[in-house]
Image (cartoon, rainbow, N blue to C red; front, side, top):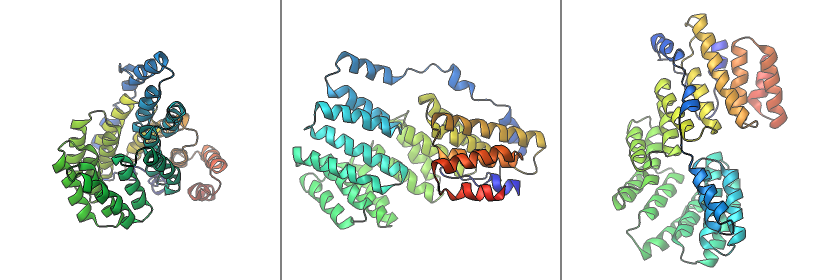
Length: 358
C-alpha cells in the first residue's frame, strides 16, 4: 500500500519509473547534485536590467525588459508588476499594452485557467486602439478566441494578418493553435511546419511540435526541443519540457539533469525542485533494500521542502511531501501537511483523502 500512495504524484511529472533498475538507482543516490547550485558561477541577467532601471528610472524600457525576463522564467506576478510600472510611464504605448496582455495570456496558459484571459483581452483592445494594425495584438487576440472556443472568430483575425503578408510565420503558428483547440492535430502539425518553413528558427512552433509529439510518446519531441534549444540554449521552457518528456518516458535520471539545468539558470524556480523530487519518486520500488528506499524518500522530501520554502502555497509540492511522510510511516507530519494544504485550499480532495487514510 505504501508504494501505491507514493506513486500518486500530481501535476507535471506523474511517472512511477518502474522500469528503472536497482543498479542505476544506487548510482543515483550517491550522486548529490545539489552542490551545483551552490558552486556554479552564474551571471545574473537581472543585474544588467536592474542597472538599466536605476540609471534611467523614468524610462519604461527597463521595466518592460525585466517584465519579459520574468515572464520567460514563469514569474508572472513579478512580470505583471513590472509591466504595470512601464504602463504607468507610457500608458498609450501599443507595445506596452500588448506586453501586458501577452504576460497575462502566458500566465493563464501556464496555470491552465482561462478565466484569467479577460484582462489579457482588455489590454489587447487597448493595444489595437493605439495601433489598429498591430500584427502581434491581432494574432494574440486570435489565440484568445481559440482558447475561448471561438475558432471562427480566431481565424478572422489570422486571415486579416495573412491578407497583408502571407509570408509571416506567426499566423501559421496561430492557425496551429486554433486547429489544436479544435482537436485537429494533423492540421495543427501542418501549420506549425509551415511556420518553420517560413522561418527556420521559429522557436514557438518547435515547442508546440515538441508538445504534440510528447503527448504521442514519440521521441520526435526530443528532436524539436533540441532544435528549440539550439536557438535559445537557456530557454527554461524547452529545458523544462525536455525534462518532463524524459521523465514520462521512464528516464528519471536523465530528466533530472534538465531540471538541474533550470536551477542553474534560476535557483528560485520552485517547480524545478518539485520535479527533481518527483524524479526520486520515479525510481522508488518496493523491492529495493530499505536503506535505498529511505534515502530516496529523504531526497524527495528534501526537494519538495525546497519548493515550498520558495512558494509556501505550492499545494502539489505539499501534497507530495505528505505522501512521502506516509511512506515512511510519519503520520504526524503527514497530517500536519494535509491540514496545512486545506488551510490554503479548503476543498483540495487529495488532502482530504490523505487525512481519511490516516
